[in-house]
Image (cartoon, rainbow, N blue to C red):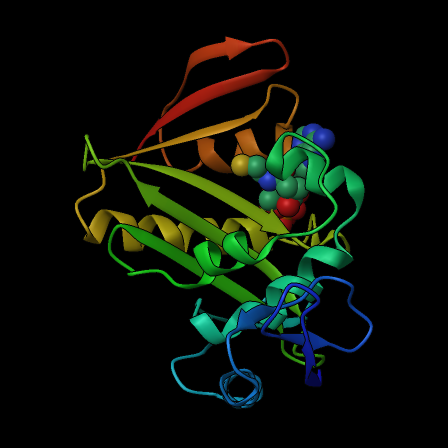
Length: 214
Ligand SMILES: CC(C)(COP(=O)(O)OP(=O)(O)OC[C@H]1O[C@@H](n2cnc3c(N)ncnc32)[C@H](O)[C@@H]1OP(=O)(O)O)[C@@H](O)C(=O)NCCC(=O)NCCS
């Protein structure tokens, strides 16, 4: 994945990835943008703190905590998702992640906001991410969400990511996950059900809110 720098029409400079319409980040000066692009390239090559995990079908993924320099992986991972997967994850259609969302998803403190990502060990493409965001008023509760790339769904990756997220959460004092999802998202309900008792706490049309006791 190659990053490049380009002036932004609204001023400043974008870091972009070849073939992707959505920019990765915006910077005030060209030097800052070049430095960010170099950091992304270095980050993509980094091999530390990675867990090698084999799935039941023999394919291998690399699992690790998400870092700020993962923004290019989020841009390409999102644009590879099918409209249906985007809709079931975000409960609405959307074209791309904007710069604020990319920052929110990657610049995390790993205490109140954790995200664990998976890369295809051969292509190094992003294939899944599990995330929780702690409720600021009820610190023992966190909202959780999970996304697996379409070609990797149904291969056990969601289960592996969610269990790791649960372990991180409970180590940090979180005792309940909440989630908003479509009531017919059977795969996600099944995965949450493996962590603990699931209760539907509210319903709004086809969307339910659930609580999972960890
Ligand atoms: C939901 C999602 C994360 C699941 O990840 P995954 O890697 O496909 O899940 P896994 O392969 O680990 O397990 C899914 C389980 O649900 C089952 N399942 C999948 N679809 C199902 C369906 N329609 N009916 C019944 N069971 C189903 C699978 O068989 C599997 O169970 P098993 O382990 O007993 O075989 C993934 O499909 C996804 O990213 N969907 C789009 C985004 C989304 O919906 N996110 C959730 C919002 S919080």
